[in-house]
Image (cartoon, rainbow, N blue to C red; front, side):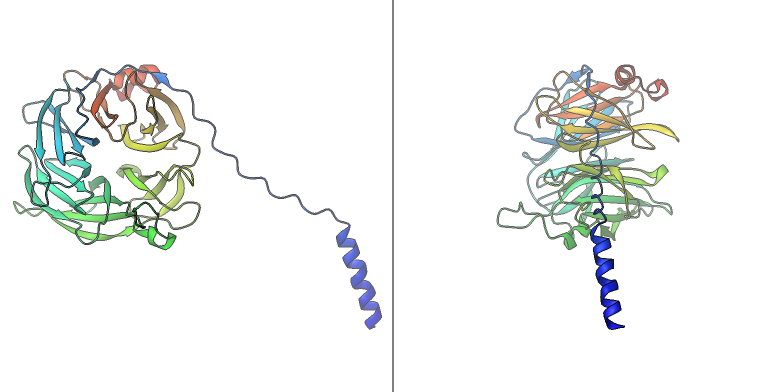
Length: 365
């Protein structure tokens, strides 16, 4: 019996050895090369001021029917205010410091009603100010935020404002080393701002999130933007070593596995803007930070399919963008504003984009 079993085993081994080894599974296909951009001329580019080092943008409709364009100036530690229709610089606000109304390398900026939010990388906080007087209303995030960059917010279901802040803290002597994967679950922090009558707004921390898997972790983060109607939050990962990408999360901070993966962008995905046309239509515009010209990539609002790309005649090395859909005297169909080479702001007419990319005309009537 023992001999029979041994011979049987030998025959089985020989039979298995004669079967060809299975071929390895094919690698997943890379994202198709991005479409070549069309050229759309800027309606204006503001006067350059290299000392400011502009980064992020937000718009605010003024009480007299105008529109302000507010930019963070990292190097001068200020906010720079432009007339959105003309590009004229109206004023600057703030200055270097840690006190109310002062800033230390302001980066992200967001407007909700008459509330202005500004993230300060080197003060490790978000400052709240009222418009139009830029009166300080308080701060939040101290002791939690280590290197805050991007800001985005939306109305909470039960009142208040949910605020998302990217926190791109680094390690090493030069602070350029990405932390270990387990720490990357703190890449985005979420806060709730509550409003009570005439009292100053008060913020509380709701937690942090970020995927920590090798292939999809958030390593170097800055820009983010969301779509409350469809429960989507897009977070840009600028780590070129693993492939720059936009990662998709729910508004509760759960990574969906979706987004726009490596190969979609040729450089870093920077400013992100949602162009909401109707409840079920619209586009995402993402700045691909290239030189000599930034390429703005356009994706479908719902399924993120590419819908084309454009570049200006001048605009380069873009960080922040702001999409202002309401009509203004100069931009009846709305406008897209984009930082140009850290030193100026460019304006595009949304009607020009509709024509150049054959987009839905209802988006810029």
